[in-house]
Length: 525
Ligand code: ADP
Image (cartoon, rainbow, N blue to C red; front, side, top):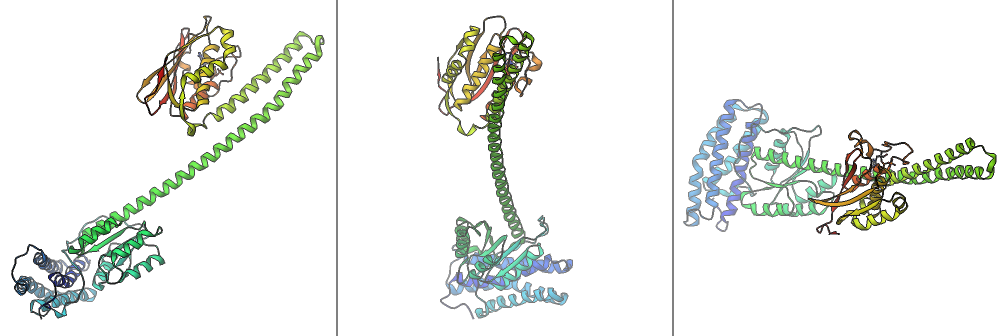
């Protein structure tokens, strides 16, 4: 019989497309099967192609712009349009049935049964058509790269139509995936609770819990939300599929499944998921490494502070005892013995300076998080105050140009100026020390320069002096060899750098960079 008078075109379209999906799907599966001969493949391609023609005709018939006419004329026109391709399919199936055996013959029989349902419709008896949503054409897949991991990805197939489930199960199996097929949304949620899935292929339209509802459930559960979901929809359910994408679905596939697209989309969704997981794992590792490093750094600094304190204490006892000994001995000591005591005391003081220097060096890298806006001029003035005795003794003249506000740690900037201006005084020549501090803007940085007219530095030592203990002098100019190393470390930690231009005998210019503040760096005279 023809369709029930109350049945809509869309309803009829759905019912016609289900057997058509099976013809297209099973013929595609048989085309891919290794056991099919080239002659069989040609026959199957014929079946597949004719089914595709019928499908296009149905879609044209369903389109709102399709030719007008009364309902019964339209149905009659559709029947007429389907008749010839169906005849070709029926004839070809006859040949295929004769040629096939075993499991392949079962699939041909499935095609034959679907064909009978369509024939019933063209012969005015639609009552045998089973109700289910469905289809679109299939392209024969021959080549798609899909390297399989050692453990095959597990895919959950959710479709209320047994034929669709069977085809997907077999198709995915052929591609090397492991599948779990369920019939309802409720069963899908249960399966997801039971075991880990790498991807879900989810039918949009299902009785009971719909695909959209299953998707919503998946996306609200943190343990499931990361699983990619690909929606399966018929052409006229695309709007719902689009809604699913907005709800977090990865992609959608149209029925009947185009094997090339199916494989490509699965591959890309699984690949994306793998990369995301890798990225998450790397972030976790990085966070752990940063925490470990921070802990090690804290431990080291705590150790340095304790060690410094514990070393300074006995050292002070040694030097003060020796000084006391010299004092109490008075004239009983020969001048040679007195010199020996003085040497020992000086050695003790040097060692004390060295310990303080090493502590300062180990702490110099710990301030990055505290970067803030610091006025260079204020930092320079504080450094000059700390150096007042050396400045007074040497008669050094210190001038400066406009100095900016930069991003730095206030204490570190004072230390930088103190080390550089202190060195400019310490490594002076016979001339009266003249020291000038200036700053110039370069892009997002300020370059601050400390210029002196001291002894200068030979070209070959310009890098060495920034390394710990990179001293070029003996104790005629006392020092620890750590001052410039501390400067270099402070700057490295705050994203800056330090270098020197120098001419032996003429003087040196030490330059260092500091990040400018967000608002244009302020400069003042
Ligand atoms: P220290 O001054 O304690 O020896 P530094 O790390 O501050 O250690 O300096 C390392 C070496 O660089 C110094 O020993 C010195 O030879 C050289 N140096 C530093 N500043 C100057 C300068 N302004 N002029 C000439 N030489 C310098």
